[in-house]
Length: 80
Image 1: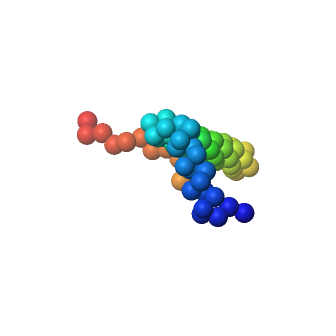
Image 2 (image 1 turned 135 degrees about the vertical axis):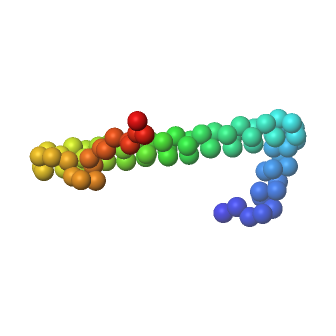
Image 3 (image 1 turned 30 degrees about the vertical axis):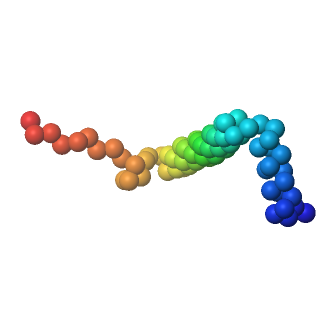
């Protein structure tokens, strides 16, 4: 569909229309937007994983009646 000559022509036209400073700022803004989008997607996935883990723990607790040994919290030892 696009070959290298077409891409070079499009880039040359963009350079003439926007100029080097404006083209550089457009590129950095676009890169920051993509980075922010990826970070938001990863944050959303981690929140869903946390919700799933909480639901699994609640289901285990309700089914077993008591928490498993690995889930029992032990207070830290003190030297008093």
